[in-house]
Length: 291
Ligand SMILES: CCC/C=C/C(=O)SCCNC(=O)CCNC(=O)[C@H](O)C(C)(C)COP(=O)([O-])OP(=O)([O-])OC[C@H]1O[C@@H](n2cnc3c(N)ncnc32)[C@H](O)[C@@H]1OP(=O)([O-])[O-]
Ligand SMILES: NC(=O)C1=CN([C@@H]2O[C@H](COP(=O)(O)OP(=O)(O)OC[C@H]3O[C@@H](n4cnc5c(N)ncnc54)[C@H](OP(=O)(O)O)[C@@H]3O)[C@@H](O)[C@H]2O)C=CC1
Image (cartoon, rainbow, N blue to C red; front, side, top):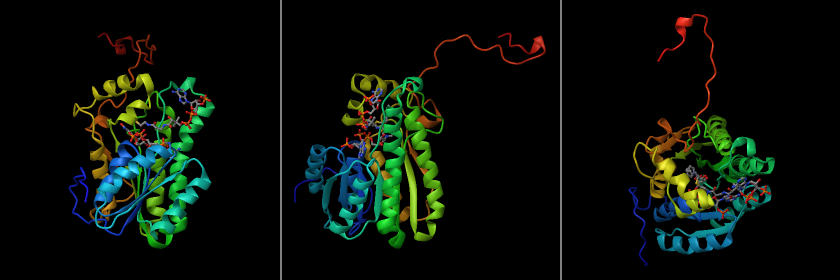
């Protein structure tokens, strides 16, 4: 057996005979999640838009498979309903079941809200919110409604908003809310649904997505992380493995922040610019601050 670099804190064979779909499983965080699941015995279907990246990742993943796990890759744009329907049916044809759905595929671009074109807004909402919904709905319709399962949505630290990421922050908060709704609506189907909110997680593809701005965006963000470092993709994958595992059997409708406390501090790389503040409301001159 070829050597795999994957190390997991979870028991070998934990997910033996299980099957997962990981969207965006060919790169960054999604690749780490797929590798750890495969290492724990889970067959994994990785799906995204770019065939070449998927094929390269599938080759790598094959080395990580343990306990009879297998890997399949398929092109799927989660914004396309027909693609998503096929992704789930292809998974069931290939592996006969679907235990875990990890909605990791997504992203955004940096842009002031008032400069955003409708096309750009729609691209981000359709990717992160509608695409996630389509995957969840299809997994439920085709398998989980009758058989249960665990769904994990990768979101972002959005509860304080995120200037310059208005589209994505709105979409991710909506996904968190959707997860709360479905945790209750589908509890009787024995489905658990949770979110993981990564902080600032380094990967080459994540940085490259922002082009020339990428380095600066990541470095400025890192400077605001109380833990004073980037997160590792493996730290997100471990959280996903926990949420899929029986140890999280009573956890549903929750968001797990894996972020070195950045969400409690100053998540954004944005600084409020200098400006002349408003006068404010007071009727006693003495109320006006003298400091
Ligand atoms: C910072 C630390 C935290 C990290 C968080 C992470 O998530 S890291 C992970 C990061 N990884 C990822 O984010 C990976 C996935 N991300 C993506 O694939 C893209 O960011 C996407 C979500 C926009 C989808 O793209 P797509 O292929 O569907 O579409 P498209 O390219 O054809 O654009 C459609 C429209 O969007 C608009 N627009 C686009 N770019 C800009 C811009 N720079 N400026 C302004 N606007 C922009 C524009 O209107 C464009 O249409 P137009 O006007 O040109 O005709
Ligand atoms: N890195 C970080 O600091 C943070 C990341 N996140 C989120 O975590 C997730 C993974 O990001 P990360 O690994 O860092 O970055 P990547 O850019 O490496 O991953 C994004 C993945 O999403 C896939 N994807 C994008 N759009 C679609 C689509 N329409 N259909 C199917 N797949 C799609 C991409 O594949 P392809 O291009 O082949 O379609 C790619 O594999 C994303 O949702 C990201 O926004 C959240 C907070 C922080």
